[in-house]
Amino acid sequence: QVQLSESGGGLVQAGGSLRLSCAATGRSASRYDMGWFRQPPGKAHEFVAAISWTGGTTKNTDSVRGRFTISRDNAENTVYLQMNSLEPDDTAVYYCAVGDKTIMSRSTTRDVLYWGQGTQVTVSS
Image (cartoon, rainbow, N blue to C red; front, side, top):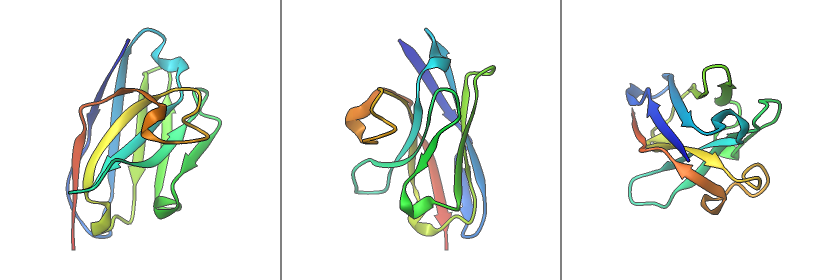
């Protein structure tokens, strides 16, 4: 069992930046591939980014490539999502996720083993 706790969300103007953090506790938390998903208002969850357990491989969805960067610190059992050049369409609840072995390839909600509680990101125009 792995528990996740996100922080760092908030209200920011378009063009601004935020850094989300996800602290993981529990059995072998640092040995899992991890990801970030988001749920915009009135829409389904969508994949944002994923990172392998070593941190050596990352993957972003097309809409955030070049703006968002996922990283991790296994010594601190923490995963980060640095979000730059934020746009109003980035407004959503952002969820940290512990991934199954398929999260780096398929990157769907079915590839998630554990979810965090979510943190709200609101980008004003």
